[in-house]
Image 1 (cartoon, rainbow, N blue to C red):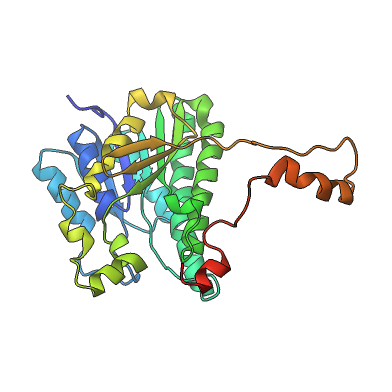
Image 2 (image 1 turned 45 degrees about the vertical axis):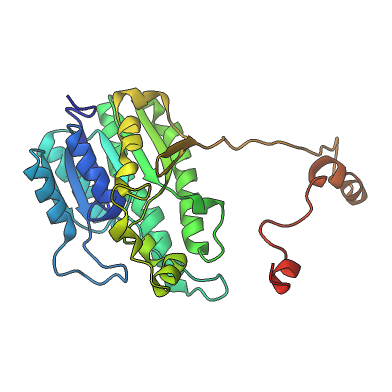
Length: 309
């Protein structure tokens, strides 16, 4: 008896990493899975064999039910076709989990327009496109729907990831909006900020530096450790299950053997005027009301960096 028995799931980015782990885990928990991947390398070049086919074969070898879909998550045409394929094959769609992503790390002053556009397109539009067509089905069905979209702790800001941070922050806003819009149709929408050793994280600046120093490629030694991608899906299973009905519009963290819930954004201080702002009053009262405990900017100051701290 699985926690997702009778459910139908679509998982994007299912060819590797956390997407693969999620598709396999959903199937083990009783879901029928459409595993979706474009089948490209990190640089965008097509692979000789789409790895999502092997994921489907692995699910089927374990007695699960799955089909592969080769397509671009940010293509409206492919997204409509993928969701339609799941519905046509199994009669419904219950779960959409948007994981597909790419990484193009660069400091903001060095980033190219293509590096910005590509990351925003895959992560942000690649969450919107499948969700649009899933939402149409869920609105018609008015019975059950579970969206979980992958954000990242980078939404708090990553110095060499302005495109990625922007996309991941955008996903949180998108999920909050979708949660409000779809609540009346028995649909939940949540964002998850996961961390694990995957093909994509192998390519981060930090991982590449460790590899250059002789460390093994992180994803190749992650199995069974707190960096194993299979540590993430149990939280996704709960969010996608009947029990997950109580959670929507939330941001969750899954890192190793730790799950967490982020606090909701709220105003914590204020400065109020009874009429049009007086500039001198703003400067006179601002520190007392709003900035009284602020001493340095986020991160290290320029002086710290110059002094090598």
